[in-house]
Image (cartoon, rainbow, N blue to C red):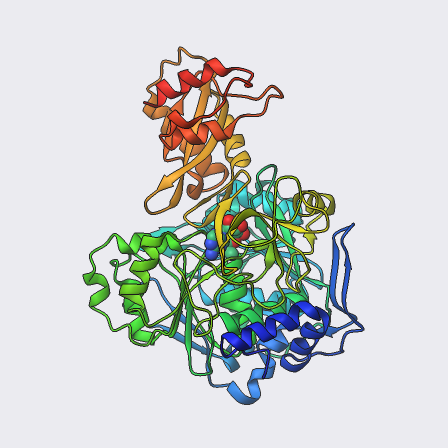
Length: 635
Ligand code: PRX
């Protein structure tokens, strides 16, 4: 049976076993039989665990857009590749066929070339969820430029940090974006970001909201007239397997955001393989992932994975609540969506609303439901299963990360029996291990541990842009020769995995990965703040929300504290973006610290959770007396 398309549970076990016994042979077969190559590889895998250097399919040459576009022109030219659903339900949806997408990507790629972009240059893309976002991503890939997509909800400071880290020479943006009933001035944010980004030479601007914006002579250009004049003939740039395809930033527990580098061949093979199997994609399906292309989910499962499989992939510009909370289901009915992939935070928000928003629509086209980004709680799982899937559509709880490039642990629909809150079994090629705090692997079942991956897989991030040592320190130093995910997991009696959450200082808020350090740095920039510490606490819809403990410079601070709370959130919005705003701020006289001066977040977390009676032994702290004060303030 074909390993590229898993048919049932027995087939899964058979394929999985082969992928562990002979990983190189396994991936070689997948790569050879399902993609087009300009030149085959010389070696399948080169792996040096000591230096954390991984190379897949070395010697091979290819272009991912040939696999996502050109090769479909013979058989699927008139099939819809991208189905664009605009923010306003009164505006018509747009069907972009494979032929049209190919033409638009080629023209866009020629515009990039005409502006001097060449192989290896970094291009920052800061666009809303409009077709030009996918097109510019593919246009970069076509000519070998490395795209760095920055989610268009990030602030000017966050944008400029990312531009400077990757030394991008161009930004692609729009005059603005629609988000529900609001419009957002993206170009204004870009202009602010570009005040301090010496590497930027040009800005391409897509017209979307027809707003008046400033265009800087000699730097800023409207895209549309350039595209109209551009040739539709753009041969692929032939890429080496390990040439970088993109950089995508993710927050760490400390320091600046990490520019995760994904390379061409392995990423293509794995995102495509997992798309096919996790969504059991069939030729006539209409697949919709509600993520933004600014996140890895959008890269792998809106753009590359679906297009490599010749799928129809939906791009939705708006939000779940506009014009009302029935919008998602209206879209499912209208386009007869077959696979629907979203985040637990969206499910929880939708579940809070009246069920009429669901019942008005015909959801019978749905076959597979997916979730990603954070642990899904049992209640949300059942709501999704009962009301959206009508207990007919399997739910795939997909665990993975920006760093992993593709889904790692997930049920295969119609094969793996699902259990609420369990991501279930590793996909073929993925070898998880649970480790104890002494660095020993925990064998057997019914065990909890730190989740590592023992063997390389094709789409793992290869490095952190410009800082390989940080890559080694973050992912390959906690446990010898293993990739450490930063997550904890439980393995049940049958070998199913349940992800229990982060074991480091990353907090997942509404499915967004937020490091505590950058938020604390932002807060500390407020002139009235001396020190701060952030922890997560449970939130009905967001999963986790942020709780900030803030020490003011002057305890006699006379300003109204509520104003100060607003100002602190304002600084966070400016430095990072509104997603990192704090839900609760407690002004405190001190923070519990270890004798080495480390903030004891465990204690702060307990207090924020309302569990101050379960603090355990605090006598070894540097300042145990502070704890009682912090508890009293919280009450
Ligand atoms: O903690 C895990 C959580 O999200 C983290 C990765 O975040 P990010 O790089 O932003 O990628 C999100 C989209 C792939 C993981 O370390 N996470 C992701 N999916 C799940 C999850 N936690 C539990 N269950 C999941 N299905």
